Length: 261
Image 1: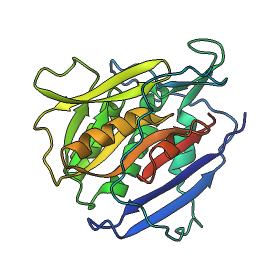
Image 2: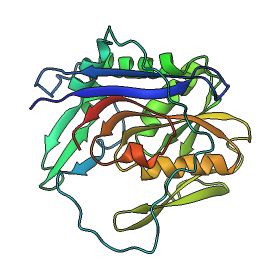
Image 3: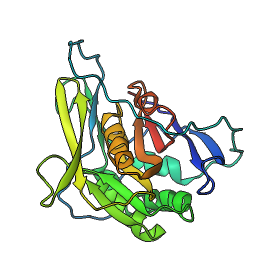
């Protein structure tokens, strides 16, 4: 199996929304998609999300899919030079195990537990995000349950921001604000504590993976409802073909590894 991994994004160079740069890099690692874990890392988190190889049947729904309400449009910019590829990206992609037909036939399971076992690849993953967001005047890192809780806190600590958990319903003990979003066969909600963020703060939204983009859109809408500026969304993996990036509209998205979707 041969995979091509792509790193593409746009991010403000400064707190001013009028200055952006965009980087693109294409990586073609070796066919071996499995990494040998170097050490054990504890944790109660389950493996990474899955995606179907076959299309879901269409079902009518009265709930319209959530699309991000983008306040500012990201301007077209010239692509930055990519003469030198970052050597860490192929190693990170190799450390993510791909398990076919799990948990049911027709599904490719993107398993990040092997990435967490590889201390060098795990550190490189965090470092790439930190290098990107340090000095960008970001005061909030909002992590989406559950695997956004793995990557969000170390990034927040390194860039001097607070970490805000975005949780599933009835998981937070205090007063919450919530945002509903659509699923293939229904709806769900994402919640955060009232008072966790303040109007005017600049936020990064992080998760392990973007598929259809529904959860990320809900997180963006929730933060923007209370006056927070979402600078960018960041994920380790993007599943191509599921149009999650399109659902985000013009909201910038930064990913490390692209997988077939």
